[in-house]
Length: 368
Image (cartoon, rainbow, N blue to C red; front, top):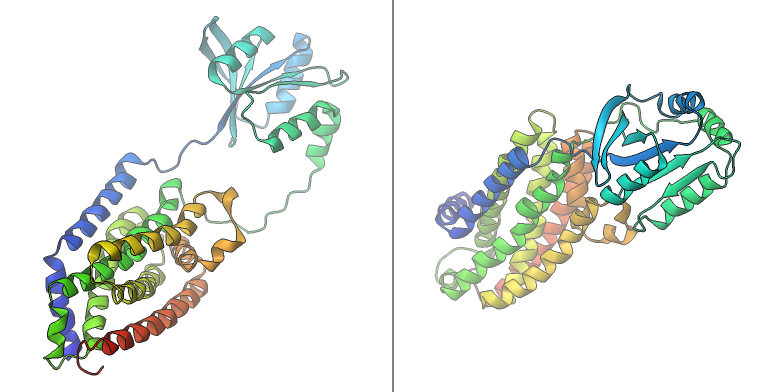
């Protein structure tokens, strides 16, 4: 009963603090950015230019063979420094390919736009391809184009037809580009910020001498800390739903998401509470908290860059927050999320126990 009373008191104090309104404002701003400024999916298709250097009848056959699997071409006119250039646009899931009628037009477009161009010759000629690159391509891309230059076009087409492609997952579900930002946004704004908020509350209580009042009232330090942590966890849960619900609608596993936020926040808040026990000045506390926050944000940032995945990032606890949130949003692997929650709950309890012992050793509060 005393704990519930303490939680109600902390929620009242929290609702009157600048941190509460800051968190709500940030959550609303994040939501508006997602819904208003960010498209559902970015158009990440590359633009390429091609010229088929063959007699007209052979060029038509080759063009159909190379791009026939795409949508029917659209007749377009492209603006260039050399004037207007007619072209045929083929659109695929991966790229936009503009087929032009002469080599000079191809070169002009490549120079104007900075995109890649290719001249295709008769399969019997060597080389069958001539590429126009910009110099900023990756080494892997340059090696790939060099391989094509040294190969026979007919052999490449034949090998592509015979290539065995197998799906690793039947009907895989993926997040939209807008939804893909949520794991990073929720982990930082709703979970990791608990370190900062919890440390700020307790250091502020130290500065205003509020925490010293626990020495003369029958309130165990454990209840004081538990009430502080519960209030911040509830704030994290509210901001999570403000951001996630309008974006995901009914597609997410909200039970797993809420459990992840509750347990993940409990763990990070426990870190903030423990850090606050070492400082009486909020400036010094924040300098340590910010360094820790930057480290904890690394898994979320790397999660936005698929090619930057590294095994060492798994040693940072926030990696599992991001992955658990992602699984919850995908409504895919609730067992993984539950396992992560158990780990964060256990880690949070250990840190909270250490914090209570530290505050008791400092003579704050009654026995807990």
